[in-house]
Length: 185
Image (cartoon, rainbow, N blue to C red; front, side, top):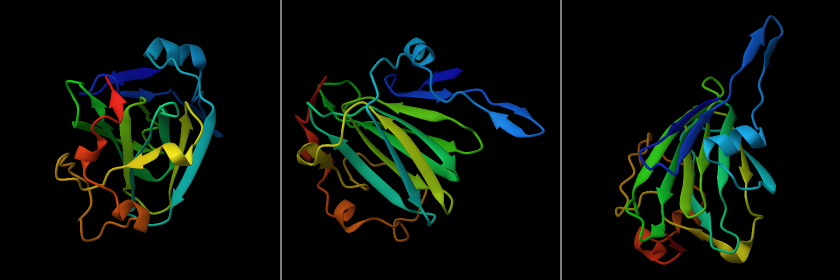
C-alpha cells in the first residue's frame, strides 16, 4: 500500500495495490492493520455512498461537531473527483489551510480526512460515484458546514464558479470564520 502525507500531514493519501489479470483486477481496499501502519487508527462505524451525475457538482464543505466528529476515508469508484480537506482545528498551525487530491477509478487512491477537518469534493466527470467510511455515525444536530467558495479559505476549485452545481443547502453556508471554536487542536 502506498502512503503519502500531504502538505497538512494529518491528511493521508492511501493507494492500495491492484492485482490485474485477463479477468480484471482484485484489490484489498481496507485492512485494519495496514491502515494502522499508515497512521489511520480509528474505528469505522458507517459507510456512505453518493452518485453525482454531472461534472462540476460540488458537495461540501461539511463536518460534524464532537462527540460526533467524523474522520472519513474517501474513495471514488467510478469517474473522478477533486477531494478537499480544510483544517478547522482552532489553534492548529494549519488552521484554515486546505489540501486536495484527485481520486478516481483510475488512480484508486483514497484520502484520509481526520476529525476536525471540513470535507468537500468537486466532480471531474459525469456519473462520479464516491464511497467513504466514517468514524462516527451521522448526527443531524452536530452537522455544520462552510460555504464552498469562502474567501477566507480561498480554495482553487477545478470548476468555473458560475458553472458549479450545488444544493440549496450548500449555497446557504456561512464563511469559514464561523468555524472558529468548532474543534480544538
